[in-house]
Image (cartoon, rainbow, N blue to C red; front, side, top):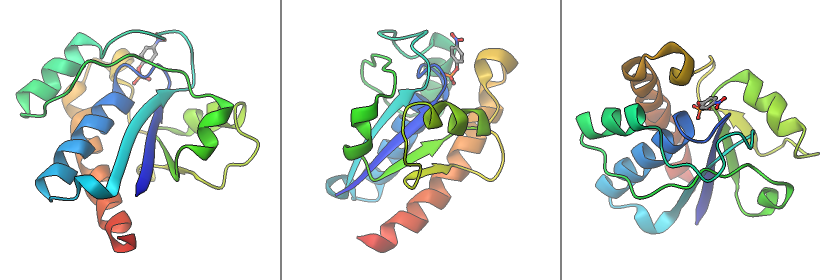
Length: 145
Ligand code: 4NP
């Protein structure tokens, strides 16, 4: 089982979008049994909240299904629950460094920041970046199966 945790700031836009996009792709590949996929935020600002409505609409428009989400802040104990923590932007790496001592499992999804749509309002650009990054991630991770 490969355990992946996507990480953003609030855990209501990018990381839950990434979680459900990856679940959809893994399901289409028939690889569900090999992956555990969740998401967290580095901030407690949105804790308990569902995916932001415009992010849900974006997922709907691309045919990605999702279940009820409850935003969670990354905590120290999560380090042992996952094999990979996949961050959306460099600021998230810094956020994670305040929670974990060891950053060996922490990576960026792309070699650039994925724009926060909470501020940009451009959910489509964020979706496209997530879609590309997750294709690359799955290609890399499926070699371990
Ligand atoms: P996310 O977007 O990190 O992609 O979930 C944000 C959502 C909420 C806030 C910041 C970013 N906020 O400050 O409440």
